[in-house]
Length: 226
Image (tube, rainbow, N blue to C red; front, side, top):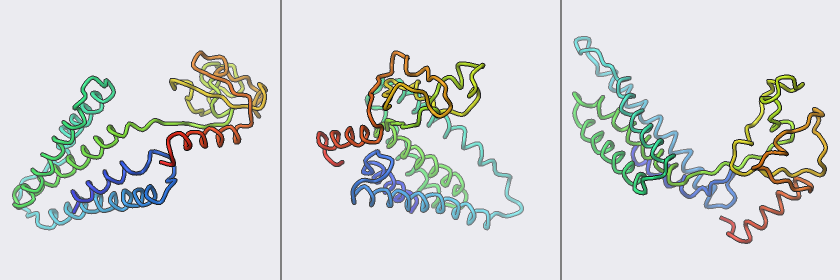
């Protein structure tokens, strides 16, 4: 059931549209399917582990299941590193293949009491790898909208600023920053924002809400609702 839940979750993630909130009925159904599947996946593996613990005998040797985190971390780390480099076009398919083999091995392991714990661990690695590969294929691109003072880099760059040390969103690390303001005035903290003058920043003098709604309307007009 956990492996079927993994397939449903991966399919739901592919159909969710990549936005912060579902915009259409199919996207809403996909988000619901992914959410319910995530509960099924986590609960299923926990129930399986509890059942295995119930059958554990006092004479059984100690188990070191946490060691399975080492190959799992190596697998996910290698995949993540390869995805960031972007030099292997078949990386996602290779990750899917490795995850599928782990799930097949999990089914074989769960068929015997002696190897059931190994099978449960392989299943968790396989499902986690499949979901990670799905995220890699989607390649979500974060679009962040924040008020002036919440994205003011002076909080980190100027130790003498009155907002020094304040938690802010690092929007200036993005490839492209678009600042939408009515004027070039300062925010509520009355502090100039250095990101206005960075090379990757574009300035649009307009009402922020109307400008964002206008851009969204044009994007939907060009690419469709999805």
